[in-house]
Amino acid sequence: MNWQVMIESLPALAEGALLTLELVAVSGVFGLMLAVPMAMARVSPRGWVKALPMAHIYFFRGTPLLVQIYLVYYGSGQFEAIRSSFLWPYLSEAYWCAIIAFTLNTSAYTAEILRGALQAVPRGEVEAAEAVGMTPALIWRRIRLPRAFRIALPAYSNEVILMLKGSALASTITLMDLTGVARTIIARTYTPMELFLAAGLLYVLLTFLILGGFRLLEKRLNRHLQPR
Amino acid sequence: MDLQGFGAQLAAGTWVTVQLAIVSMACAVILGLLGASAKAAGPAPLRALGTLYTGTVRGLPELLVILLVYFGAANAINAVASTLGYTEYIALSPFMAGVIALAFNYGAYMTEVFRGALATIPAGHREAGQALGMGRARIFRRIVLPQVWRVALPASGNIFLSLIKDTALVSVIGLEDLMRETSVAVGYSKEPFTFYVAAAFIYLGLTALTTLAIHGLERRTTHGMRTLSG
Image 1 (cartoon, rainbow over the protein chains, first blue to last red):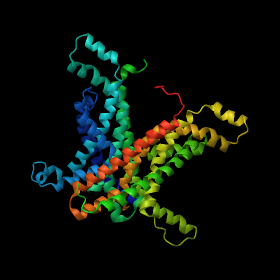
Image 2 (image 1 turned 90 degrees about the horizontal axis):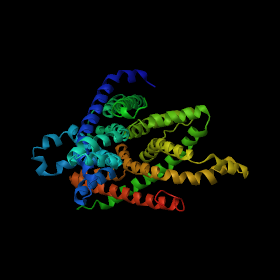
Image 3 (image 1 turned 45 degrees about the vertical axis):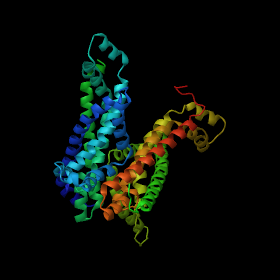
Image 4 (image 1 turned 135 degrees about the vertical axis):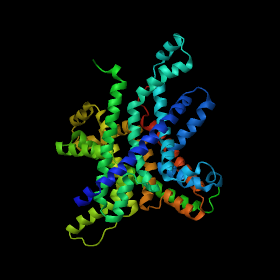
């Protein structure tokens, strides 16, 4: 085991870890923004409202993330219409392709988590809101969504961890995330064991960091459930 | 959809993907049973090892584990082999590396599934076996295992579905699976969208078929069991 290489490459790996975190955070926020309306449509009693989010969820949960990334990164270049459009500056860049693919992917999983949570909101609470004369929009804003977020939080933290692990695929489209940096250094030094172990250690560290953050958030949001 | 004569190649890749998924899952199940037994009933050092295994592996990206096994484990295997006096270089094929990496990875998830399932078997069942004079192995095979399958099946099904999707990652180390064959076809045809969509739908077909099979198995194994729905 070559400890020297491990220590020397730590600054570069840390920089990669920052990009990894950035990818997870940006696509996590976009994914959540997409997932909320999708989950709301998904619990609608009307078939045509449900259809689009269901198709989206089915496709993105049923296919490998790698295929989705390649589809966005390589696939978008096939069409002249896209290459001459305003989208091309984004779609020709690996960073945005990764963000788009991760966003679409995580939004599908998150929408399913939120759907379960929305269905778990006690019926009586919604009825109580109706009884005091709240409009449907107000019930969504004040009762259903806030309650669903709190119910979904533990399951959502798992999804963020899965996203962190999935973000390693960004290295396959040339991005210098944690895995990407490790692979690049290995190509130069040929010390795969050392570098991958160091990267793995940083991933586990990031996992703990994210889990810790969620634990704090859960404590705060669900403080009414805590024993006094 | 015009596949420009690459259909047979995609089919061959699909077959490799299916083989990889099934072999890896079989190994992961065995690893999971061993891990769960170690964590549930093993001596303290084995229990600690099991906890370390599931704790770290589930925090590592699958891609990293695959790269680690392919590039790292080959060195380790050869180092061990040379100390044993074996001088020829042992190369790890991408398929083998893929199986080892996926089994190692998903074995950790299966360990947790089986650990939960083992906990649902009442102690009285084991004791009844002992009272009849069965040995430990026979109790496990005849009493525990048949019941564990039922409890573990839904969660294992979900894990198998993610494993199928993660087989695509093994293309990164050069295994000629569906993903790799698709990339080769893209290289010739210069139609990335067409071919990656085709690959996506083949994967979708595989996961859909698997879901059906799991539902069928679940119906079979829970046959005669009382459930909430009656």
